[in-house]
Amino acid sequence: MGMPNMMGMSGMGMGNMMMPRCSMKMEMCEGGMKMMCSSTDQMAVGMMQNLCSMMSGGMTSMCMMMNGMMVMNCNMTMGMCKYEMMTDGMMMTCTSGDAMMCKMIQACCENMMTMMECGCMCCLCMNGMPVCCG
Image (cartoon, rainbow, N blue to C red; front, side, top):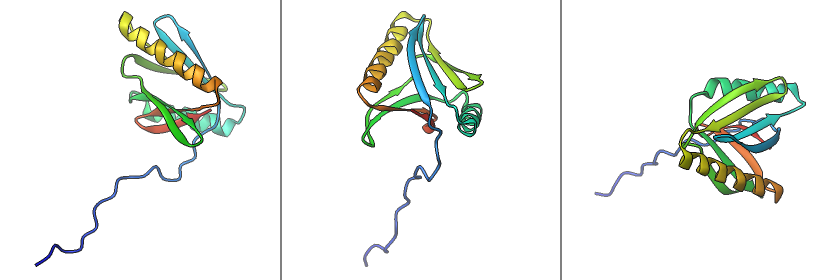
């Protein structure tokens, strides 16, 4: 007797969620890095801020993409990431009091800034959910 013809469970997909497009600016700061996400579209700003509020406390990651393919993914597990809402978007600060962790955060920041200069798009995610792209 053979195995019954059963379909396996498939993993959850991303769905058709629209993520806010924004302008992203990254910079190194004392203890780590800052990333500013801003937009002139108030609908995108509201969506971004709501997603940040709902997902706060979760793992922050940045995915660098070129031509729809992931080039690099940086999980910011080495620092404490905090989100501040601004009138035109939000600012993420990721810092650590440990010198080696700070060095890793700043190395990720430097790599991501270089990739964005070369044409990559950055997607900021919280718990694996895209919050904004730019």
